[in-house]
Image (tube, rainbow, N blue to C red; front, side):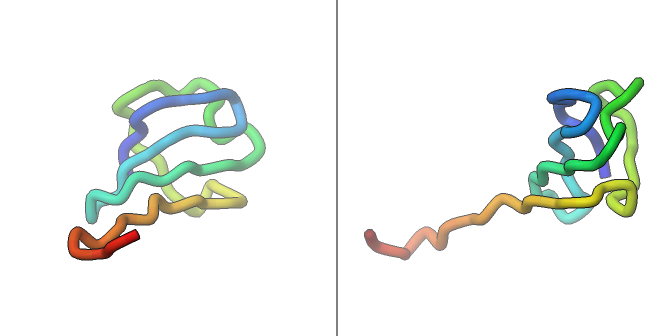
Length: 59
């Protein structure tokens, strides 16, 4: 997975190989990382995946 943005030493946004945006949280996960770096999702203690709405879904 590829890093899109580093929030802090403990949180970042990444895009997976199947094009899902995720927030990864974990102790020191963002330390010394920058946009474009590769990261293994096993390094995260929590992963939040973007929920996509169906286009034909009504509210």
